[in-house]
Length: 430
Image (cartoon, rainbow, N blue to C red):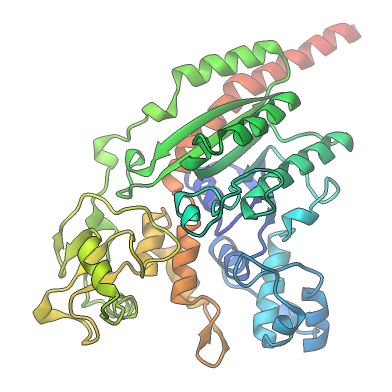
C-alpha cells in the first residue's frame, strides 16, 4: 500500500491521478482549511455523506466541535465565531463529516509530527497568489520569502513539519511532490526557491524540477506549471541512480501519443438540447455591460454556437472566468442565444472547467447531486466557488505521468536498495 498525505489538498487531484493509474494507495491525511474545497474533496473521493452519524449533535454541540478547527470561507482568512454560528445545522454537519472522513488536519500552521501518519508521499501544492504574475497586480510582492507573512510562505510550514518529523525520530516520506506556478523560478523568487531546495537536500532528498504544459499531456489547456519531485536517497549510489534516471526520463521532453490527444470539442458542453448543459450555460452567461465589452473583444473565442470549434486549446483555467483575461469565451449565434441578457458570449461553465482540469463528468455530477442549500438563495457550492476550485486544482493527466515515474523509481531503485540493505544486514548477523 502506497501511503499518501495531501497537504493543501484542494479537491484532490493527486488522489484522482493515483486512482486513475491503478496505484494501490491510501490517503492517510489531508490538510485543507477552505470549506468548499474540503467538502468537494470529500464528495468526489468518498461519495455522499451519511449525516445520520451526527444525529446526536445539537446545533450548539456541533458549533463547539467545528470551532476547534481553523476553517475558512474564502481561503484567505479564518471564519469568525459569528460566521460559524450563522451556519445551519446541515452545513455544520457536512463540514464536520468532511473533516472526519478524510482525516483532515485543516490548518497547516498547526500540524505537528505527532499528527502526521507515516507516509510514502507528501504532496504540497501551496498557495500561488503571492508568486503568480497576477499577484503583482494586487501588490502581492513577497513571494516565498520566509518573512513575507503571506499565503505563499506557507511553503515553510512544510519545512517545519519535516524538521519536526526528524526531531521526533519519525521516518521522512520517501517522496515529496511540489506544484506551483512557473514564476517560482523567476529571478525575483529563485533565491528563496533555491533555499528551499537546499534544505531538502540537507535532509537527503534528490530534487528533480520540471516545468510542464498540460497540452503535452493530452489536455487542450495551456497550463504551464512547475513541479518538483523529491526522492529520499539513503546513500550515494541511490543519488547517482536517481540522477541518471531523471536525465534519461526527463518529463520536459514528454509528448502524449497523438492517439491520446483530445479535441477541445470533447471538453466543451455545447449540446444545449441537454437541459443540464443549457442551464449551466445560461448561469455562466454574464449580463452584457460596457465593462464586459473588453472581455468579449479581447478574449480568445473557443467555440461558436453548438458545433463550431474555433481553437485548439483553452488558456489557463484560473479561479475566475468573468474577467479579462480568462480561459476563453464561447460565442453565441446571435439568432440562437440562450438568454436575452447577453446574446454575444458566455464564459466556461464550472463543468467545463472541471473537465479541463482532468476530472470527469461523473465526479462533477456527484458534486452537483450533493450540493445543498446553506441559506436563502445560498448553495454550499456556488458557480463562482466551483470555478475557483477548478482553477486552484492541478491537471490530473499531468499528475498521472508524474506518479507513473514515481512508481517506477520506487520499484526500480528504492525497493532494490531496500532489499540489498536487508541482505547485507542478514549477512552481518551471520
